[in-house]
Length: 300
Image 1 (cartoon, rainbow, N blue to C red):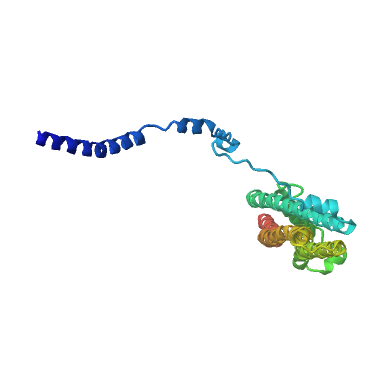
Image 2 (image 1 turned 45 degrees about the vertical axis):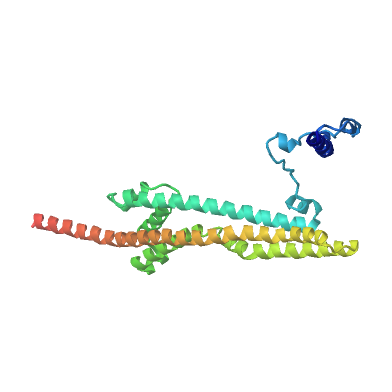
């Protein structure tokens, strides 16, 4: 009995120590009744913002076209009479240069064809007159051949005081000089444009900068956006002048080189024609002498 009473006392003492931690653990694991009330009383979350158009379109960027307020149109619209006259002069120079370049290239192409025709038809003819008739009317080679032929057949009066050799040489040389003069038509204009167009454009630039600085001084604003636009607009004049001068200079040098090659063929043709015309009278006289000698032999 004594042992049973002792064990009963131990159990009574240890039972509170075991039950209290178990109850605390159960209370910690069970949901608190205030949590739902707190979650219900809390403010609702704001909805997510709608996707932007860039996200919907797959990241495509939209570019906005910005017009340049400073350009050729603005320069013409805002320019005074001096600026417009300068632009008009440069445009006329450019149009004249391109017209001359295209025209001279076509003329040189025709001259090359006429040279090939002269080499093929003229020298294969039985006589100078028949060879001249095979060439075209506007051919420079026909003009030279007709001049030499006329000098060899019409040599009388005061011209008779000059020997036939000198007279034919002078006539052919004058014809060659006329052909060379025609090939050089327009080249002086190209040289003038190439040397003066940059200075005309520079004059327009100086005039435009002067007016731009005057307008800025009157406005009293010297910020970069007020200075860069008008000054850059004035510098366009120099660019236009260079754009006019460069093709003119290149075209001039190219045409001069081609004219030299063409005139070499013309001079060669004139030298050969001169030799043929001088040998024709000798051949004729020699043939006449041979015929007279044959007739005298027959009579004897």
